[in-house]
Image (cartoon, rainbow, N blue to C red; front, side):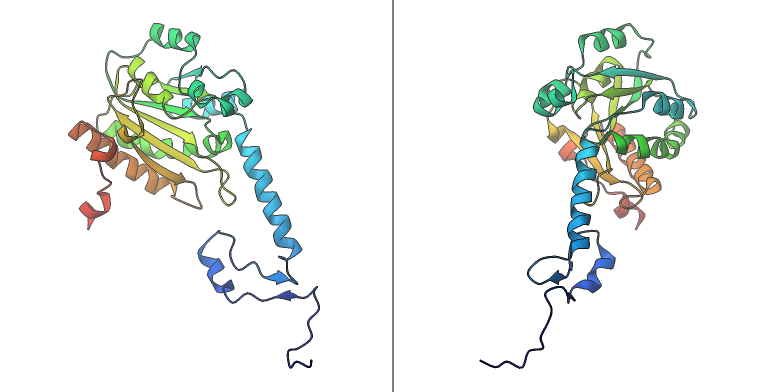
Amino acid sequence: METDLPALSPEDPQPDPWSGLREFTAARIALGRVGTSVPLSEALAFRLAHADARDAVYSELNLALLTSGLEQLGVSVCAVRSQAETRPQYLQRPDLGRQLHPESRKMLLQGQAPERADVAIILADGLSATAVQEHAVPVLQLLLPKLQAAGFTLAPVTIAEQARVAISDEIGQLLHAQLSLILIGERPGLSSPHSLGAYFTYGPRPGLTDEARNCVSNIRPEGLGYALAADKLFFLLQEALRRQLSGVGLKDEMGLLES
């Protein structure tokens, strides 16, 4: 049977009609094809992205470097850890990552925390310590002056290892803070292995669930930039204190008020 279709070699990459959309997204679209498969370069890029995501999950905080960066911002720093003893245990037992180790709890109880603070800031490795290492200090460099100029009282900044989001509830309560704000490494994706998330809770205490928190996510230069993230967090923290709530009852209306 004859055909008018041109003869194509299986090794020739075929153009993708959606290729023009690639400039608008980091998602894996319009990869093209060679025969019935994707081009070798795209297959290798996918494997590299998968390796980056796996590395992010197992990355560790450089406590000395992170502490030095925070102290240069003029804040006092303390380090704690969760009840998860190892990284595999942390990944397999999320409940242990939500609870302070007894030694860390004792240290915070015996520390020199103020009798009352407006905000307790926690930095936690989460599922991408690299994200915290790269993005937390630049965000705080912009956020802390806003909080201080507005008269916020701050508890010492806490660095938490092998930690989940909910550990901020226990830390915030021990530091007598009205609000706990945790900057934590988010679950890595194949196009964003080093993304920072920020969660805050009004009236932090153990036992709260996710509906009591607000989240600002995808903080990184390629996503939500540092300046906009700091502005958004400052607005939301002010509103949380003014309205004495957080979670589902607090909406991000910053853009509405500016328009």
